[in-house]
Amino acid sequence: MTRRFDVLENCRATTPSSGATNTATTTAQQCYIHPVVLFSILDHFLRRNDNQERVIGTLLGVRSDDGRIVEIRSSFAVPHFETEDQVEVDMEHHRTMYTLHKKASAREQIVGWYATGSSLSKYAALIQDFYSREAAPFSAVHLVMDTDLVPAVGAAAHPENCVFLPLPYELQYPDAELSALQTAADSSELGVTGLVSDMEQLEKTIEELHAMLDRVTKYVTNVVDGKEKPNNIVGKSIDKQFAVLFQSHLQDILMVAYLTNLTRAQLNIADRLQRIL
Image (cartoon, rainbow, N blue to C red; front, side, top):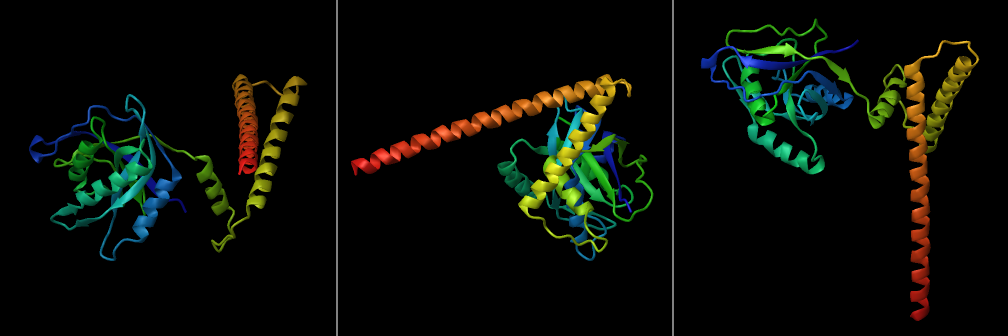
């Protein structure tokens, strides 16, 4: 089964007297999400206290220069206490965690916040207002993950709330995360899989690379022989990838040559010092 989630963004406060101020001046138009963010949110939800119905946390990532494209790369949990009458968010914990995160990932910044549940909370506007100030001058993105596997989250406006607009989003798979996801997908029906050795992983990667090269070679051969209609986009992509891989291979060779010369020089210095002593 697939869990549903929506990416939302507030555009304005509907009631000036509510006390919420929107400091954002630029709104996002496209959002990219790394899978590790979704797994972190689910892990946070599974580890919640027994009396908690939902959890919230901070989203971190990078933006384009104009702020219209957001890439959500990581997240961390933020403790909060919520009742029918009030909500309390541990702002100090949020700022402490963000300071620690900046030491490890200096480029990542606050881009918004997440919450679990099947609908928008009535306190969403208050929390959104806080994160809008943290993400200023850009608007804060709100990611809502439905952990109950029910219909999609609604984004209707309320008189006392902000107007939340859904954003188009897309999952991005970095190489390291894609390898982990493939390993998880190949696990048995019991959900248990053994860790492969480095040699087995290398062998599997080489086999996949060999299979991809066979498909590309077959396609190019069919196009040259007139058996298949050429596609300019595919042709340009193959040429671009070949140039990138060739350049990368050349850089690897130069690096190996540099390290070899450096090692030889160190051995010569050590040999001369040994003779002097």
